[in-house]
Image (cartoon, rainbow, N blue to C red; front, side):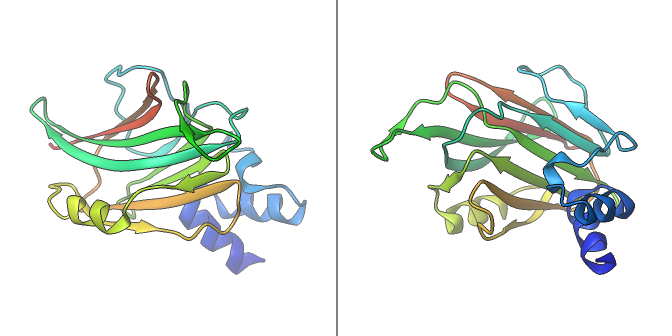
Length: 187
């Protein structure tokens, strides 16, 4: 249990004691009380609130069907790199349709390990070309590498952006179309 909780602690950025207690009580990691941690609520707009560590949560937990269309990056002349996760819903027949809001998500900002850990809920379907995303991020001045974890649980998916150095980030979501945005300061 201790090895498992330590690994989850490193992966999700919460204390090992929190994880061990939650796992021993049969609690899902997504519902762990992180009151001792730095947890922030994402907003629906850019507000210049950059963070250096903690967990950002956002989105709508009622959304149960989401398709991840693309993960892209671009440098912005205002001094940050923007990461965008484009989202859409799936109709009952499997056809894509517009999604007004992002599903529930968490982004763990881990400065010691220089990485951002994204977890999206809502039974995500991966509908992007992983090789294309990895190639695009090779041009990034701040992202060292991208790790796409397998879909272990059908209701959530996790991926990691390993950074070249710890940097302040701002996480927010936008609607019409739904997307999750991360701005990483260049300096």
